[in-house]
Image 1 (cartoon, each protein chain N blue to C red):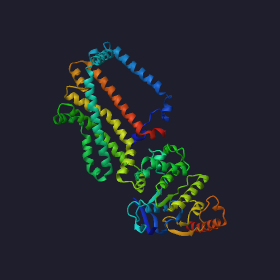
Image 2: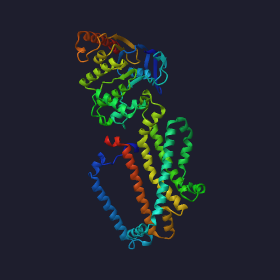
Image 3: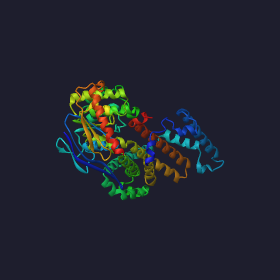
Length: 278
Length: 256
């Protein structure tokens, strides 16, 4: 989220850093995947072993139980409406939050007066625990999906805003001058220079925003809802069904990975030049 | 016509005052090539920035075609010392940028841009990104980008410094050929006296900072000039030596 993060954007796509080369041998992507799989299996094995032997299985359930529960949900199809509700609220909330964040960041980044004027208010807003807004949103937007969308959006918007704002501020003044001499209008400077130049910053915000969109949705669903993965977690928890809680969490984690990968794919497409130049 | 009228410019950084330019008067005829020579950091680039309208003089006036330069001067093309290609655009998209800004259709601007890329000897590098090019290649891409939209006047800040000797001669040749065709006004900042005499109608020599015009020399070598051979003519040699002699006196005086 800070300046230091930016040069690292796009790193780790197969290119090894000098530091990593010194600390550990260079491992290919395929082999690393295998290692990761092995680590996961070992973890699950220990969990399975510990459950009922070292820790009460009522508390931590066990992987086989959780897998069976997942299979039951999938085979009967009961999980899909919940997944869909969560995905929908997360994606819509993310898009709204990201859109507002980018627009606000560009706007304030280009207007020194406004950014100085609004500075204390923005930081005050950022310091709020936004999750605490959930009851308000439910009051305003009702029990249905709109309140979840709003909560997801509000968690994303600031992250994207701050990064976009910094990105706009970082644009090289010489490049702006160069374009002005070429008779570029303000709009052309914005679209051909400032936005592409700020793109890597914007993506830092978007990547950080992905899990928060999901968190916002889940919390909204846990507080008041009759659908969604957050609702599943909440319901299973209140029934002391630890396998159900873990199964729902596993689905949430899988969703988070998919969303994150989607943002990575978009970034790679937009920032081909950065990858080529390595 | 570009006119500088008793220009004065001081930069202030905290308590430090740097007198960059102090009382420069200069008139540059349309369609002429003028070379500015002077010690490093003497404020030549500052003058170009003022002609481009990026800086404003503290005192004095900059006139372009009789009009004071107040906003950014969009009649000029400016090739700065630092190459300012956009890193996320390929060479061809960088070169075509001014045409894109002017609203040309994609096909037409790519055609024009690739022709210009060919002129500066970058054929085959159209789809590369600036980070994949050498310093000299980036300079040539900047040159192509400036030439492609045919501005009335060209401001060149040490455009060929990063090039090897052969390529530099090729670029001199290109510049003079295009100039013969389009008849732009060209202002060229350089450290290379051979380059200055080869290309220019007038060579203007500046003093150390704060920059003032020290002296100027008319280069009445015949045009069109063969950039490869003109430097071996006796007349070139005479002009070169006389400027060199005066430069030596100039700097000798100031050194003491």
